[in-house]
Every structure is written in structure tokens, then in C-alpha cells.
Image (cartoon, rainbow, N blue to C red; front, side):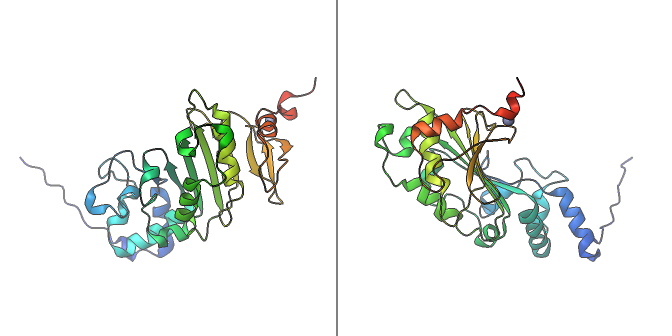
Length: 251
Ligand SMILES: [Zn+2]
């Protein structure tokens, strides 16, 4: 005998808006671009916001329900979730680094920019002859400048070294390029080699908005000598590997 499960539609849109928001809060997933698999082509303008697996019960998929749900959900998503944009040697050549709607970009509160960079992306053969302007930096700044409500913007630099370039140089050039990125105000700059977990000290802004160096446990290590302009590579290395007095503890 066939068992028929009767389903009664639930009048979700008749719930008070606060209750709908509570439901949305349980569903949000942090969006990351580019997706690990290509999104369905019909959804290309925001398909990357969707999870990589098909139609699970809890996820960003709810935004496809209808126009009202989409706009309510996007509002919560932009307020509560952390967006990630990764730029690497493949997608840095794309005309549009981040195909995101301007209205979405405008509303994002937290965003992590991840740069996986090689020496060729920095545009110099010799690390000592790095040009002053870095076209990829300008392109990234252009892509992100619409973020009007951003509160928490962080940069992670993952270096891919090569025989000529010690990863130090890559971290150095990338961080100096973004320390003062005009309208884009990064809160921290972290460095890593082959994972996203920061290995060494990192740059963070203090309460006055000045750059300082902190250990992985977020203790103050040193004030960045060049607050708004470039430090030199020697200063950079000593800060990057500076010992944290708090972590070392009393002798
Ligand atoms: Zn420490």
C-alpha cells in the first residue's frame, strides 16, 4: 500500500517580521567567492551565495523562495554574516573580480579579503625592484569601494614563495600596499603560508586607528614604525617575528 504524506503549507509570510528574522538568523551561511564549484548558470548573478550542495533544508537557498523573502533574507545576511572574497592568480585576471550586486555590496558589514599571491602577481621579477603601484591592489580597491556600511574588513595574505622570492617579501609588499587603502579601512592584516591560519604576528589597528603589531593571541607586540607609510623590510621582519612579552611570561 502506498503511504501518502500530506503536507500542509505553512503560512511563513504571515508570521510577524521579527519571527521571520529569527528563522533567517538560523539559516545564514557565510558566503564565499569564488565558489569551489561553478554555480548553476541561471543563477549566475548571485548563485555563488548559495551553498555548493543541492537543496538542503537549512541554508541560503531560502532566498530563492520569492522576492520578499530574498530581500528580507539578504538584509539579515549582509548584517550578520562574514563575506569572503579570495583573489588568486587565476581569478585576478577576471574583468569583474567579484560579481556581486551593488546593493548587496553596499550593505555588507563584515568582509574578509584573502589574497593568495605569487611573485608574478606582484608584477616584479626581483623583490627589490617592486614597482610603487600595484595594479591588482587598485583593481581590488575598485571592486570593494561600494562597501558603504562595512564595519569589519580584514586582509589575509597567503604567500606562495618561489626560488627568488622569500614569502617575507610577498607579505611585506602586499601589506604595505593595503595599509592605507584610502576609503577601504582594513582592521587587520594577517599572514600565512599554506593555510588560512595566521602563523606569525599580524597588523591590527588600535583604538586610535593606528597600526600596531600583535601576536597570535592578540597581545600588543610593537607599534608599527610607519603608521601611514611603508616601513622598510628590516623593520617589517623584526615586527613580524617580534617576541610577545605576554606569551613568554615572567622569567
Ligand atoms: Zn602574546
